[in-house]
Length: 411
Image (cartoon, rainbow, N blue to C red):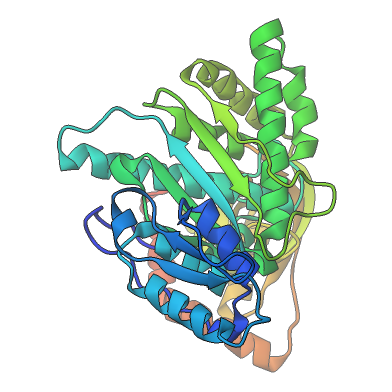
């Protein structure tokens, strides 16, 4: 996603699509969606559109009704060029929708009018952070249902965010639109919409009855602790917030979905129920049995002998990036020797929900995993480049993450 930028800094330019690839009907739908006004034109041939708000007296576009007329290509080319040169923020949003067929998700926070620029900048940061967290929760749910994900699926979900495009922020940090390309994100947008509806229903049920079982059923719709936290971040400090989704006019709605989904709204009165649900999800999510293969990237123990802790960069067996494992002395030595010769290890145990699924308990059956020579060299070079052998053992003797003794451990 784009980096945060001050409100007054211009957004990056959007490559204008080729006029040959522009569907006049899609262009008209995008203009109407983003507040442009149709001001007449030759009926059946073209329509004249002007930008919304105070800029209505400036740029105007002639958009043909179809490609059936000889001048249709020229008019579309002129319209695309005018949009690329327009100072209207909505022009950039229309160009994004033309260049990359996308579903649009719009967040809006009802916040007081800022007195100076600083509060507006802070509000914009909060809005972007909440929007990103909401999208991340949807991406996690699209990969599998859980009440609490922790570190599970996070790498893949965060990588998916690279496909999302951000529109210009609204004034005062109140509104933000993101564009989710249909090719990469339709599953996520559909899942997120269902999850938000289910979360709204569960909150209503809890506020009406005082009971929370509706949140348990909502997990199957994609609701999770991550989603409740995102909505809390969206609503905090506001008089209310809403999330609205509009399908790509080129791709149309998914099968079985409403053509114009209703926005989902939350208020400050929903915050206690949302926080309680998040805590419930974290406490209820069980640990899971795993058999993980990973490269040892760190060892630590309090002396030259006895048990110790290792950290693995997970290669297979669990949807997390790294895990920590407490090992008895013999297993700790196996892990140390495997690291020194560039081999991953395989270990069985339970991936604990406490701490975000970043720790394996009850470790057993620690064994080195044979890999081909090329893979072994790659692992060695990767670990040496990231840590270095000396730095690796220095971390074993000290570091901020865990209590340790003065002695440097043997592998």
